[in-house]
Length: 177
Length: 154
Image 1 (cartoon, each protein chain N blue to C red):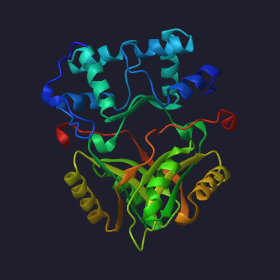
Image 2: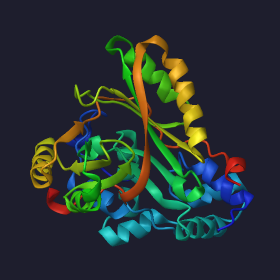
Image 3: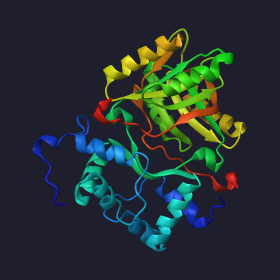
């Protein structure tokens, strides 16, 4: 790559700071890459940026973790996974790190996060998203999580989605507005 | 849209990671042993039929800015109204109705934490409903993809 990266732009994963050109690139690609043989060239023409700079910035954002992955993103609902269950769990603080990682490793879990409790309204601190073609499928997957969690789990519930009211990709507006 | 085996293979192989190189579709074509133009046509068709929502980057919100999961318990008869207000608020990119007392769950994003807090405060004030604010404390799963069970879907 012939792109020169300024020393001040070289940063570790944790403190990677987006510059304006990265933001332009995010804006131009958040709804997808152009489906042409050389997408970087097509983006470069649009953004007035050399194609190799587009690709290099893309690769650096991916290495830095700003881009989690580049993928053909399936619409699970359209594919037939009509049941989306947000399973939420009340887990001992001491065990949540270990158990969270184990739940996150289950192949049928698509997202897994630790979040704060809000007592007394909300006792759950571990969230794992599970998809299925039926409620039974979601329930049986939740049962497997329940078994894995054992005594460290003090309660759980499943929140099924009844409607998707809005779903869009990341929306990063110009001028940081 | 009826998916054939090549379509399924495309989704299986590339729902997690697509090559980020000079000619990504050419590389995929070599892996699948089909022409590059066919890879592009198939992806375009899958996208047109919304089987895939896009071919492109999935951004890490908390690295590209600030984001939070939040929920409100809307009275059932006001659900649509409250949902519409949430959808109109700046930075909201997901909003799901869920079967629970907390029945509206949304993700709000902002360029930074301060702006995010301001947006949440403003929305909470507008809705006059207490809001559960559930920022991510830790992520235990990096990859959004999961294995698709084509037989179960057939």
